[in-house]
Image 1 (cartoon, rainbow, N blue to C red):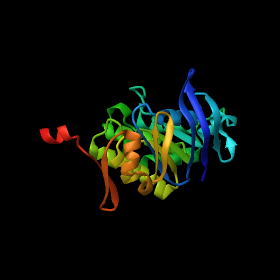
Image 2: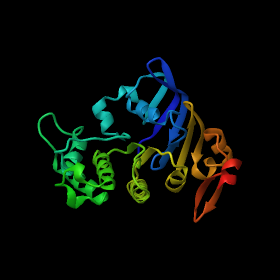
Image 3: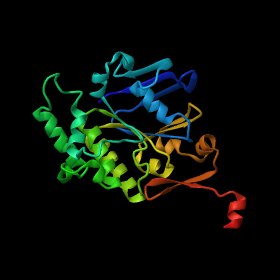
Length: 264
């Protein structure tokens, strides 16, 4: 399994730093959630790892090698990335979408190998869409479309998967279904997943580790049980909350302001 380490990473959009001397080590075979207020640098961190914006300082190390020394095609064989918003043409079928994942492995002349086609079938089976490969992606339900994009990153067959708010816009049922699927990928297939989530209760339910960010800095990081605390939530979100165990997981319950309690 691949290891990924950030060391004193500073990255920016133009001249404005968005990440400032960020250091983190992402453990192989675990699901790590990046959480924090809007605009704190969570999505930027994923983009920096993928090389989508220039770093000003520090290092991103993949298996002992600076990620900037790894070509784009080689990197696509080692890290898969699912952005917040994903789009495809109306004519594209689910099968065609999943085949896109194999391009980094194709020879300059020729198409998918037999192994590639096995990966495509396995990816669709894993997300429960094996019987829908012939359907156009944009005709699928919201939950099915999100599973379709997950199938694509699975078919890329990388050790590391980056996901930026993979359950955004989904109702509660599909949020739990999709995150349950991602957790199964970690547990059963040994994937290393780094995911942006806004909902702390979802993070506490599905993550192994949490990275709490604010204003471009990492304020706390570690296993869920040690990181999701009332003190950390107050520091990161400026929010008073009670944290308590329930049915084997932590629950984050924000406290109502006195005026809100009175009006209720």
